[in-house]
Structure formats: C-alpha cells, structure tokens
Image 1: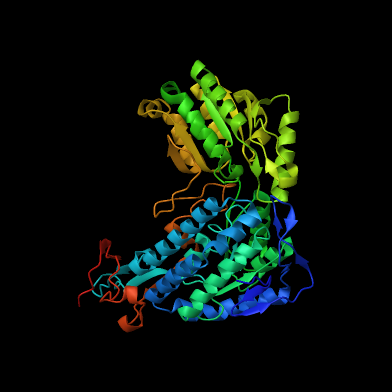
Image 2: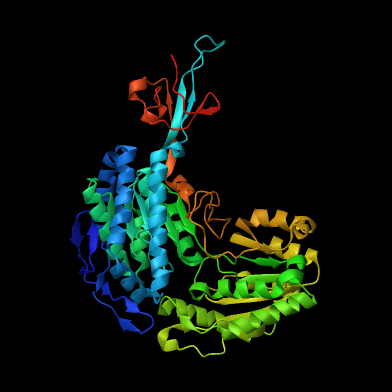
Length: 532
C-alpha cells in the first residue's frame, strides 16, 4: 500500500497545511517517507463534524451490525500482512516478532469487543415494573440501560504502535459502544497509524457504516491535540502517555465551557515487594524474572517495575547480586525514538550524580547513542533515603530500577503509604507471608489498580477481568480501565425511561427481550421476558 502522509477525514484525504514532519527510523537515525502534515483547525473541525453527523446513524445500527464492523476490522488488519509489521518495526525499533505479537493482541481484543456487543449484558438493562395500586403514590414503570456518549477523541500511544494506538482498545471499545472516533496519530509512528486507519475505513465501507464513524488526524505539535480535545463536538477523550502530556490535555478538557471526561493513563512506578518466604525459596529465579520484566521492550512499558523493596538479609543480598549480573549481561537496545532516548539518558545522568543512590549494575556493553540505544541500569538505596526524597518515586521510562533495602516490615508499609497511585503493585511471597504482611496488602489495595502475586507487571493479559488503571497519577479516573472489555464503560452513560410504551423502548428494555440479554428485573438477574 502506498502511504500518503495525509489525514483521513471520513472517506476523503486531506493535507491543508504547509507544516509537515518526517517520521524516523530510531535505529538508523534516518527519515522515513512520506512527509506527514499538521492538521489545521479546519481539518479538525471537518473530522469532528463528520463524527457528530455519524453518531445517531451509527448508534442506531443493530448490535450485530456493530459487531460485524469490529470483526471486519480484525480481518482487514490481518490482511495487511507483513506490511504493517515492517512499517511498525521501522518506525519504533521494535523487532518483528514483537510487532506480530502486538498485531495479534489487537485482533484479539477487537474480536472480544465484537463478542461483547453481541452478548449484550454490557448495556446493564434494568427494569422495575409498575404498581398502580401502591399507596400513597402509584409506582411508575422505570427502565434504564447504558447508551453511547457521542464522538470520542483518542490519542495513539508511543510505546505500542499497533496494540495501543489506532487499533487499540480505546478505539475498539468506543466503536463497540456506538461512538464515532477521531484519533490523533502518534507522530512517532504515523505510517503505522495510516495503515491501520485505512484498514478500519475499508471495514467501515464493507459493513456500510456511516461516513465519519472514523477519522485520522496527524500532528507533531501540542496544538493539534489541544484543539481536538477542546472541540465542542467531542464528548470524551482517551490518552496513553506521559504524566505531563496527559495532565495538560486533562486541563484542557476540564477548562472547556462544557467539561468532558478525559481518560488518561499516565506515569506509574509499579513497585515490587520481595517478602522473606519467597526470597528464601527462590531468590535467584525471582531475580531472573525481574530483570527479564525490567528490560522487556527496552523498559518502555507503562508497567515497568521501577522500585523493588526487600528486607535486609542474606537472601536479599543474593537477589541483588543475581539481578546485577543479569542486568550486566543485557545488551543495549534501541528505544522508540530520539526524544524518549534523550529523556532516559537525562534521568540516568541525574541518578548517577546523587550521592544517596548507588549504582549497583549496568549493561556491560556500551550503548550506541546514534541508534538511540539504552543500557539497563540498576541502582540501590535505603528506605530512609527514599522516604526523604520523593523524587525517587518518579517514573523513569526505560530499563532502569532501584532496589530499596528495608530494615523491618514497618519500613515497607511506610514506603507503601508514600507511594502515589500506581497501575500495579507486585508481591513475591508465600501464603504465610501474605498473612504476616496483611497491613502492607491493605495499603497496596488503596494504591494500585492491579495486585500481582508471584509474577511480574509487564505482559498484561487481554481479558474481561483485566483492570489497567489506578489512582492518580497513574490515571485521571481510577474507576476505569484502558485494557479489557470493561474499557467500554468510559464511553457509555445510563439513560432512564419512565412509563414509555413498549414499542418505543430500546430492544434491550422491551418486554419480550428480543435480544435475549441478561437484565435486572425487579432486582433479579434474568433473561426472561416481562409477562403481562
């Protein structure tokens, strides 16, 4: 497929600005063709206006039609074949197997949302039947369900060019809900975004979705994103990226004359707590798994384990030494782009200058800055230093972590209390450890969205039960997830119908329950129809 570098606004291409930028191959430092253009205010308005016009026709489509659209997207993505993988690899430095894994994950969650739409219970249909004889006032017929909110703005993430970008769960959950999508492509991989967007548009055409159900805009400047979020036709937005970027757009969304929800997934330190029972039984194996998780994807996962805590002991010393050896053996690798590499190198330089933090180990092979390569680093410090310096709790995006030595279980609890909101928290231990450290577990339940036992936070399972979120600053809304089918909850709202005629109700609320969905009828879950 020939890439154009243009915006895809509904069914037409557009390039109304003279301002352009070139994507780059981070491992070679060379520009990639074609040039991509900055979206103008007129192009942003065109895309949102089309999405607004498409909203009612799209949401009124039968659930089966929306599910067919999602399945068609999955098929079109697979039909792109190696072209999608090769472009993603060229723009991000990810090896082809990693890109293939992302593609498979995107197809999986797209089909999961198609199944969710068909099954139907996500609408949370509720019916409370009337009682005209009730005293002192008759009871009305009250029914409610979830309905889509309207056009949604989505921002592609830098670190997952396929799985958390144009083809991510943000886009697919919005489609599943019945919301048109206007997405801002990530400037680090605009070619990958264009290929994915064209697959969506082909699927929309094949399933006869209304024009404007999807548009793709490009832009390297912050102004494009701000203009999109502030457009009055956008009713919700989703973002995955840095704390600074997410907070800036959140502020734009909140400052609008009509504020909108802005679902940002941002920074997270993802602490790991090593409890005594686990270290006594398998310290070396845990250290190997930890370093594998730390360096996966060159440390560019939002769930990267940035802090590891353990009680001072021979076993903790053994763990630290094994981790140091594994870090030293890890070969430097290319980061996503020069900007991320520069920020990583700056953060490492800052840590190296601190007297309170000791360099424990680093990759023995030298990194090549011309290839945006990052070496892995392992630092260590004490519980007291960490408590005295809150900046050490900040995320540094890349293959780096800090080991923190604690003198007592109470030290671990004190650190847990100081943690900001995190996407995940991990405990390595035994069942006895969990009982002995019950207070630590209780604190972590308040601090993190996902609690992991004897595992590692990277490699998120795409499934119905997954929650990928957490208290601020991990996200702007801790109730919601950006991975798993619960992601649809961000783009729906409850609508209540009182005393409406049966024929004018949504299908899921009609007496006969023609879709056969699970409903709450007078407080009881059932698929039965309403009799009488």
